[in-house]
Amino acid sequence: MLWAILFVAAIPLLPLQATNLAAFKAVMAMLGSLVGGAFAGYYFLSIERDYLREAIVTAVTWIVVNWLLDVVALLPFTHQTLPQYFMEIGIEYLGMFGPVIAIGYLLEKKAAGKPGVYS
Image 1 (spheres, rainbow, N blue to C red):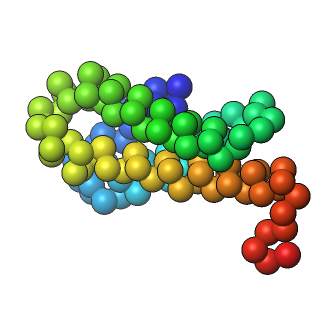
Image 2: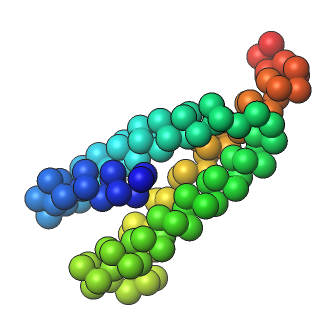
């Protein structure tokens, strides 16, 4: 779902990609953060333990699934080589690690009753 939402959101932004690639990438990164954060928050509502492990598995799964979907659905249209794709688009998916791992880490600390860094 995360990939599909961003894919559909990118379609009306394609003219922006042609005229201002930096603005297009910034908008897509912002949308990815918002949608990914919402999905991560919703997902962790159903998790009751092993938060950090779940976060790592979730982040890796999301990244790999997004890469696979891009290779199947996006690369044929962009005519990019695989290395070019990873340098221009694929590397950005690694940003999913930060927020998802942070959520898992904080929930793990909270569940263990350990105070936060600033407590």
